[in-house]
Amino acid sequence: MKANRQKTILLADDDVNLRRVLEFQLTETGYQVWTAQDGAEAFEIFAQNDFDCVITDLRMPKLSGLELLGKIKTENSEIPVIVITAFGEVETAVTAMKAGAFDYINKPFNRDEILLTLERALNFSETKSENRQLRELVDKEFRIENVIGDSPQMRAVLNLVGRVSRSDATVLITGESGTGKELIAKGIHFSGKRRGQPLIPINCAAIPETLIEAELFGYKRGSFTGANLDTKGKFENATGGTLFLDEISQMPLALQPKLLRVLQEQEITRLGESEPRKIDVRIIAATNQNLEKMVEQGTFREDLYFRLAVVPVSIPPLRTCREDIPLLVNHFFRRAVEKHGFENLKITREVVNILSNYLFPGNVRELENLIERMVVLSDENSLTLDDVPDFISQPLQLFGSVKFELPAENISLDEVEREIIRYALDMHNGNQSQTARYLGITRSALIYRMQKSGLDE
Image (tube, rainbow, N blue to C red; front, top):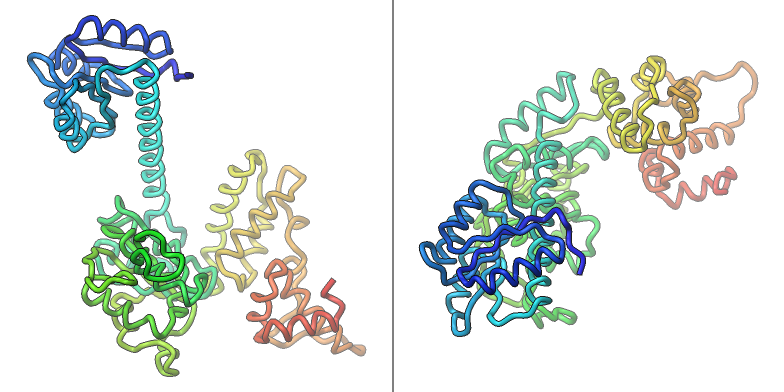
């Protein structure tokens, strides 16, 4: 059995023979071992040194194993403690587990049993520590103060978001695709009092209508075909934290009354059950659709809309915050060169300037993807105008939104249409659905026009 030779174990047992045998076995396996003959000595050693795990007998003089466990957990709640129990001490062992012990081992035990239990305890401790560090990193990265934006529009948004993050109010975030609605939702969560609890995202548009109710509310075993176990839904998984309902406009109309009840009563009922369950969840919803218009059309409930929009947050499109583009370019550039190992790569002022004059119909997401693509494809020491895509560096001459600078000689209408489609496809990285929405036509109409223009290849 392989062990990390840097792991340090504290072993406490008043049985000198057992203590020596265990010390030898653990040292032989590669652990560094400190020993104590009673609980009081063990805690004195523990308080003055760092350990990866503690193994302790339950019955010891001066300070029992249970008392030692309690004092250790008060000092360091994350360190795993394994307790050794004699025959007939199962109830005491269960008490130790409830008090925070990782596991217990009954005497007599063999070498492999103790080493296997110790290895599991250390692996569990490492995973727990890594998860804590990851949470701390996520907390830091997604705080509101780390959101990039210095334009008056974004300052107003960040000011509002900073204030609402200190409350538990339901928030409705609106804005075009790519404006950073999910980033704002994360900022609200990780800047608020629930940041130590889970943030559970769910994309309402990505889950089939027949499955979304079970996904949100959970279900009882046998409530439908394939329901083999009692299963928690997203609401229960998010208890104590935040549930982020992305694309809330796609929530089925038949399910909206149940969501309204959750907002009103803070309780859910699993599929197949009749008794409601209390939850404690903050709701943040987001959409790129006009929910007020959907209410008028009868495709979204008015009462649900008002319950969601307790605090409405509207994210402006990037084209209205042009002064933020240089900040975002430099931010995404630094992130991309670090991610892909291009630390010596530079970006020229000309590139920043030309990107600042582009409209970015895909908003911040398009800008981030563009910068990463330019960094990955670069083969020089700096990004220059040659690295900027043609549809940005050599744009069509536009006056207003649809007028072109027409040549003096004849022009082919088919060629104009072909160029518009080609530029739109380039802008959206070949994504036909996004291109069709941008051009205001259906995807099937776009495919037909691409075929007609020879662009389908």
